[in-house]
Image (cartoon, rainbow over all chains, first blue to last red; front, side, top):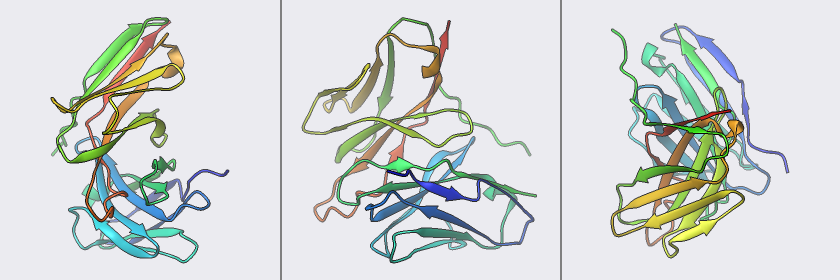
Length: 112
Length: 117
């Protein structure tokens, strides 16, 4: 079974720009969760999509948004980028009904 | 100004020793716990999980212990190897009646494990 695939692996963006990150979950998994990892805050939950609906949301500003498609692939968008948005963005795939969550390799976003 | 990073606990062991990594969780309503291993430049890798109706679960070279009374979780690694060197995170998943919180994990700060040959 293929694992969780995140693209791109690395991104460099300028303040004020927007960015879209992509996550393809494990085949058969219906839940995709997104996390931000920084040295200062650790791993923080952004939001979760299950069957194309946002089911859970963390405490991030509205500049962070996402969506999920009918094939369970998910995208995350960050608008009006700030320097503090520089982080490793991780997505996790799970069944959504109580099973384990498996992570992708992450997208390293650098905002300059 | 500079950002202040988390001060992660560290554990240094010799190859072949047993390692014990501890984690205190916060939500007494959490019913599912996972341990992850994260190597530099990679995403967290699933190690082992345990549900709240259990107090011990064993995998290959790893054992997770759960003490709900004191909200404590531990990961034991037997015969630690240099390839075990990484940051280890515990994560908890709170339960709710509708089961809609399954996709949301709360992570601990992590522990850096260094294994010396």
